[in-house]
Image: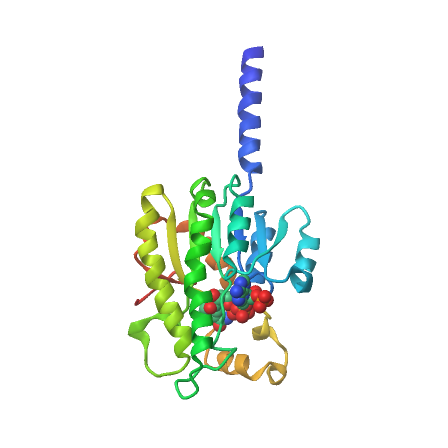
Length: 270
Ligand SMILES: NC(=O)c1ccc[n+]([C@@H]2O[C@H](COP(=O)([O-])OP(=O)(O)OC[C@H]3O[C@@H](n4cnc5c(N)ncnc54)[C@H](OP(=O)(O)O)[C@@H]3O)[C@@H](O)[C@H]2O)c1
């Protein structure tokens, strides 16, 4: 009987340890927008979150979230284009398994910077490419061992529908779209490189997520023009899209690295 009790106790403590084990995600560019929303939703689900920001002292919304989820969120300073900083953070977390490396931080140059062929600023184009393409791979490489040592082994790259070459219908936002098409190819090939280690490199188009809950605004006239138009055109993804992407990333495996995934689980043409 005592042997039975001892075995049952061992089994129970094993199960408790398993259920207590939280997965870990690292989110780049966690100060605002999708990144901040990912941090919030992952923490609410009980994940351990390493949230990175270029300037943590000015990341007020992120600091407020970290205060709300004290034992879940750690804030780290990281400019993804500062490769010495990336190396240092990678070394700091060398022995920490990271289940999901969420490569979210990027220049969303649909919204910022000169973005037309008529006013092409080549220095800006290079900045966008360095941030949205080169730095994404650099961060992935710097954290590869931590990802490979984890249970989930996922690298999720936040791309954009605008990166779909088959979807080109006009000439707007050339730098942004070129950067997303390039990161798609870079990460699609990188997925082939690391799949033998069980690491799934997932390319995801998040859409424009309604992180401010404008869709629920009682008075649409108070919603910023850009979002109002997106609501009218029904192209704004609901706030729940962030949770849908967390579920999607959880679900996808190495078998899915050959597809360009949209937040809702649909597949986009490359
Ligand atoms: N929102 C959309 O409409 C949309 C649509 C499709 C795809 N996406 C993609 O989804 C991701 C998030 O978009 P978002 O709209 O949430 O972007 P966002 O609101 O413009 O925020 C961008 C984030 O990236 C960070 N960042 C920029 N340059 C960085 C650098 N050199 N090092 C580290 N972090 C850097 C910013 O940090 P700071 O606060 O320090 O500037 C900020 O936290 C991006 O990859 C974007 O391309 C967005």
